[in-house]
Figure 1: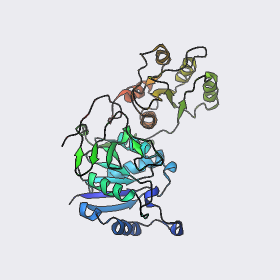
Figure 2: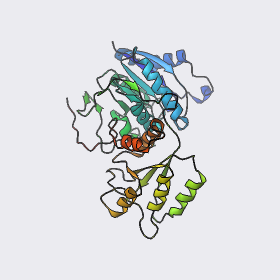
Figure 3: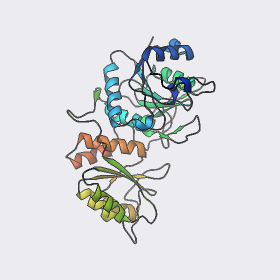
Figure 4: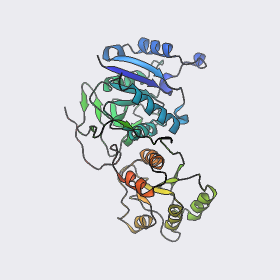
Length: 347
């Protein structure tokens, strides 16, 4: 029987009733609860549980991403697959981070959670847990998000609905697997192309959190960006610029490009993504986008905001003093985060 390690980090799935909300989450009690409420897990795999933390996912960030990645690396000799229970709000950020930190991944890492706690009668937690453990036994060596009967590539997922059981979407990238009467695995599942290794610089954090997101608005005064950068000198090393359409920004009468050039000249990496729900950035397509490229901004291609933000944090940590290396890394398809290929499910 396959061995699956279940790492708990928090979120709605593990929430207790109000009367028990202050009780500490203990490993033995958590294991018993899973066995009692989801007995199907024992039929799928030998499940070992470990509690890393019990946080609302809005409190999960770069330190926790590194800790989860480290725990997964240490578990490879005792687990055929890993399930990470996580809150939904920032699950896509954590999934993207793990996809960049776990280079050469050779087994499934499946993040899951729920919109309702496991202890409730009408909950999605039971199905998501069963599906996640099932997928963690299968030949899908990627970081994915399992929700509502689908496994999405972790760095191509976004939380698209706060009130639906189908909480996550993956624009531009079909599911890695679908779980219906059968489990259909897609033909675009990536195989490892290098030996497994933690992608973390020695003696430094794996992710530099000094990244900000700037969402462009029509009529936005570029002086606001310049003033903000001046006020936060040294505190911001990267900017993800959510631009219009294929990467366009105001050019007349108040162009944004000079402010971008000032930022780049000051050592700030500027990565452009699109505000559109689907599609990709092409800074050569229109004059307004070309102005950003000429100012030193980089194209994020079809990366989603979550993946682009986390990848920029990782690039800054890996190459703190080498802007050219950062640019090359950001333009490289590291873990399937940027791609325009079409995909089809296989039997």
